[in-house]
Length: 126
Image: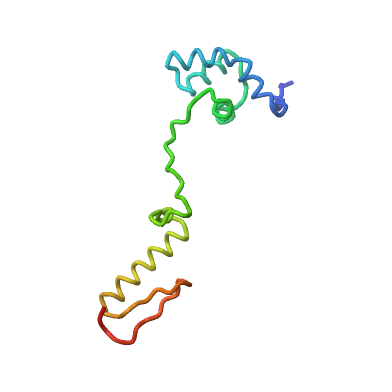
């Protein structure tokens, strides 16, 4: 008969990590990366959860600092804040900018109204 691996009860991974908290903190101070700590503890049979689960527990419990650099969020009331790159709002803003440049090159007057719709001037010139 082969043994089947039984699934862990919800939350037990967190319990395993927190039970090893002191060892994890010590290894981190010695310069071990999260993946190295994970590999060492799984080899010893101390923890059995997946690496992403292990890393999430470390991050949530504040045992590691995230090395991911994040951009500050643009303030809604800040007029200099530009739309986030790749968003629909950004794409519309870029399309509008291109349209305005083409109309300017053609010598057409463009007036932007408060509802953000454009009214084309009849005459040429700026």
